[in-house]
Structures are given as structure tokens and as C-alpha cells.
Image (cartoon, rainbow, N blue to C red; front, side):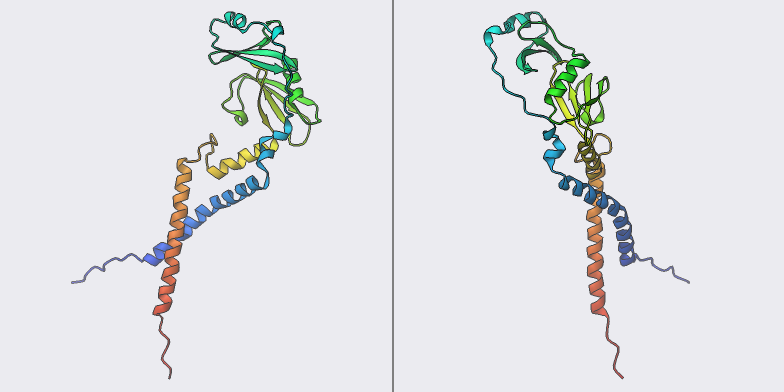
Length: 244
């Protein structure tokens, strides 16, 4: 009777094939890691943050006698829970908190200033901006763009002329500078997406896709190490031909 041949796994061929495909797949992502990491190290983080776009706010003396009583201001807003004294455009203001809502009040006259109109938002943006460029576009956004996700809407977007499209975001509720952005920051955010492999929110540095890629890289290294050791083992087993 004919006997069936016992199938055996050719481990070297299996390891070589696995190593080849893993290296091909993870190699593409490794290239993204390298290029994105190169950009993030080449451009200084202070430049990315846009610290040079804004000038420090001057500290101006405020005469307490010229201010309205904070208790009087709070009494006008039934849901008010906090009040903060600030200085904007050289004038003292109160920022009153009503839950998630904020109200801007002139600290001297007591008049409500918010929500800010376009002219008021531009005045504050000019005061903050440290560059020479003029304002080229001002928009009141009801939908928060991805580059400042997490901030409350609506928000004023004020773009200035100049290299890298410097942009300041001003809150219409508080008059405060919320964020500063430019094209180098936007490029950083783009390559950061590839670096951490979070293609939606761009914030999760421990997402499933990144963990899978990391384990694929480990498997590639292990199969490569096994093939290397196997090649040395085969060389030791080769015998020299007998001399005639």
C-alpha cells in the first residue's frame, strides 16, 4: 500500500517569506516615521508654537477706585459664578463666567462688551500680533476648524499678511487670544498625524493602528534575527570537498 507523505513545514522558507512581507509593509510606515521625525526635529518647537507671532501684553497699573464693584456686576448676571479682572487694549475689563458662557464687561462703565464685533476683534488681534503684516481676512467661524479643535464656537479668525500665513483666533465672548497658528504649525500637525498614525483626531499616541505597526516591526526584527542565525548555522554544516 502506498503511504501518504508526511507534510513538514519548511521553517526557513516560511520565515523568509514572512520577513519579506512584514518588512515591505512596515518599511513604508518606517519611512513616514523617519520623514515626520526629521521635520519635527529640524523646526524648533518654539517656532511651531508661534511664540514669535505675539508680543507680550504690557502690565498696566489699574486704579481700583475707578472700577465698578464686582459684586454689582455679578448681581446683574443670575447664573454668574466667577469674575476676573483683565486688561484689554489698555482698558480694565471684567470677564464674568456663567457656566460655560463668558461675558465681557467694561470694568469702569459696567457696560457689556461681548459678543465682540469684527472691528473689536481686529483691534485685539493687532494689539497681540508682533509682525509687520496687515490683516488680510477676518471671519467669524461658527464651526471650529481642526487646527484649534476643542475650543468653543463661535470664534474670530484673523489672518495677517506675511510668510507662513500667521493667524490669530480671538474669542468673541472674552476678547482673549485663544490660539495662534501658521503654516509651519499646520505642517507639523500633518506630519504628526503620520507619526502617531492617528488619522482622525491626531491626538491618540496609543491607538490600535500604532500598536499593530509596533508589533509588526518587532515580528520583522525577530524573523530577520532568526534568518541571520540560521544562515550562520548552515555555513557551519557545509563540508569542504575531499582533496584528490
